[in-house]
Length: 209
Image (cartoon, rainbow, N blue to C red; front, side, top):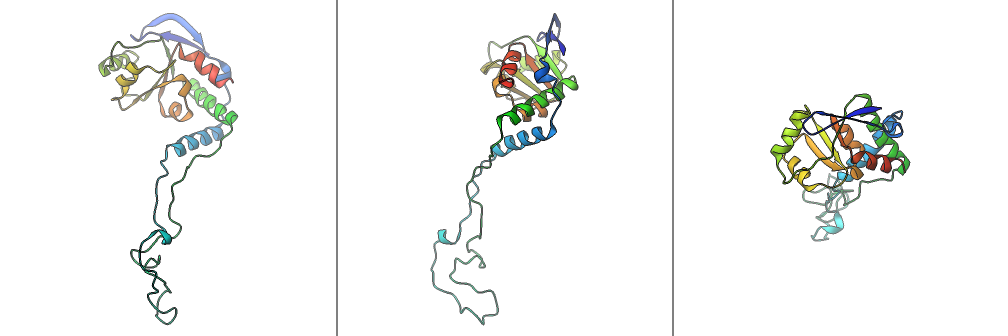
């Protein structure tokens, strides 16, 4: 797939790049996408929820009433789960919600997400750029030039770029990430994927291991 290269003024540079069919032209696998997105969201969970069980509550262990004949549920000490202020049975404990997903499945999911964007003509390729100082106004100008204002855009750069990242931090619909950190969720979440020229070989290298 051949794509024209634009500059940050939104003008054509006269150059084109060919997107690798092994990355942007595969048959999308929806189940692989589902699994990779599920893993991404699971890894975002803190997993710090915790409630006290019977052995963790301080209180007398004296049996409050007779075992039978009281007319209600049997109960032991004041920490019994059947009493108000008592323990919780099988409550949440700190845990890791992540799970194992084979590397080949993750790679297929990312290729599938990029292929969907290519099919939708939702990929822009721009010249590598940076800003002298972080300035949100500068990035807003780039968005207007590329006709992306009001759209959810994901800028993929060759590596970490603090000036561009900080310029986008206050923009609700704009994300910036390094090509090495590209993931299925962020690709699908964006309406338009903006790839810099320098990011293309990094994406190809990472997804064709």
